[in-house]
View 1 (cartoon, rainbow, N blue to C red):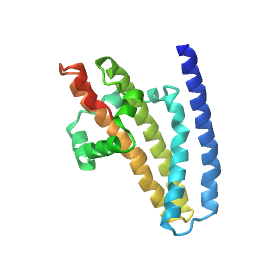
View 2 (cartoon, rainbow, N blue to C red):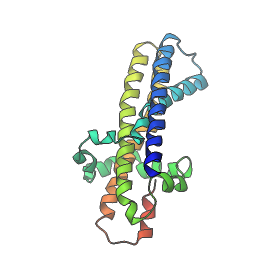
View 3 (cartoon, rainbow, N blue to C red):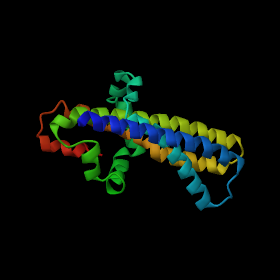
View 4 (tube, helix red, strand yellow):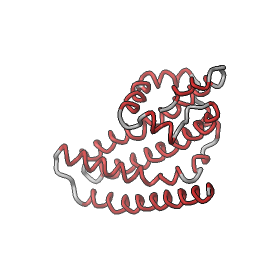
Length: 201
C-alpha cells in the first residue's frame, strides 16, 4: 500500500510538473509579444503568474531525488563564518519567522517537512536539500526568463518578476542552508527530543 501511494504521488507530481512546463512555454512567449500596461497591479499579477508557473515546473523534485545531482559536499558546506554573516545580513531569521506567521505554519511544517522528533532529523536534512535544489533551479530559470523579458523591452515586468523571484526562491535557498547549519550544531549536542521542534520551518 505504501509503495502504491509513493508511486501515485510520483505520477501526480510528474504530471503537475509537465503541466507547468506547458503553461510556462505558452505564457512566457505571450508576455513577450504582449507588453503589459504600466499598471502596478497588472505587472504584479503577471510577474507572480510567471514565477509561479516556472517554479511549478520543479514539482517533480518532490517526487524524484533529482537533488542528488549536487554532491553531498555542496549541501554540507554550511558552517562557515562567512555564511553566518550572509544570513545575518539577509535577516534569514526574520524571514523564517515571517514564513511561520503567514504561509508556512508550524503544523504544516510538522506534517510535510519535519515531525519534530529525533528520528525525523535525517528526513529533515533530506527535505532541506530537496527544497534547496528546487528553489535554486527555479531561481536560475526565472532569472533567465527575466533577462529575456527585459531584453525584449518590458523592463518593468522583468524587474517585478525578479523581485518576486528573490523572495520566492533566493531567500528559501539560503533558509534551507541555514536550517542545515543549525541541524549540524544540534547533532553535536545532547538534547531532548522535544527540543528539536525549534527546527521546523
